Image (cartoon, one colour):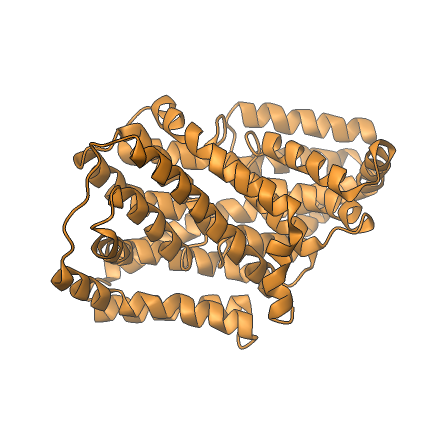
Length: 426
């Protein structure tokens, strides 16, 4: 069984190097194992579909639809205008507006790709036109987009919660402070950068513009209030909250007269495409999880870890190193689905809180979205701005410093993660 597992791992790696979509790269070798082990194809397909048969996972396509509609209905533009009106007089204002808009948009999006695809088209051209170097503008936009998959409603958090059988609401609450720390870390870097750039200027404060921009964001402000307020108060389940958020987006689109039949169809089509890719990964990961269970991978990993050290801090350091490396070559969704059944039992046996472990895992894997060869945010940023991937990555590298610093801080101080969930009674 161990030999077969190694063969599956090699096959998956080769297929991913050949740029085969992640879901197909996983499901092909796993189906081969099922048939070679004497199982029927029906058994393999049933296991695959059982991996999708989860009510909490229904929130994933709904949250994706919320993010897609927020982009297409012009809500990202409204948030950007509001940030610019508020922060206009601050030196280096466009950089801070970039981060602030990412925070505001993250309360609705939950996806780094939706963030960078929507906001990148607005922010990078504006910053370049104002005299910011392209690499700085692109690197900041890509890096700030990572706030979305950490801040609730985080799609990776929904997937982790379903896989680890922990409360989605607790994980959402635990993610808020780390996400804000990521934004603060990026702001610190921007402040240091702007002090060395006397050519970076600000714009005069305009009270009329601020008033108009504030009125334009009243509607979008209700979305995170209702969505997160409902989840954290226990009024809604995450799936129900996602449904309400979609209805709010439709209402906002009608009020702002930006929702048309064409935009609705485009939004549904884009959501279906993204959800289909995630669904294939979810199903194939369920089959791979069955293989690893039969191969007793979790117990083998536990024996390996405890043979090195039984100290939970040493374990978390090892996990951080492994996840940072894997995040550069493995899709984040696939990594969560494959690694949680292996690593979480070991973490719990060492006294590590599963909610805290989930937040650390998500931050690790999200940093991988910025790095080659798989980093999807890196490639989307290059595509949106029409510049080479290498140039975008050079711009991203300096921003990895504050992001990794936040990861280290969150890992070293679990109280930063667990304080809010405990306060809210999770």
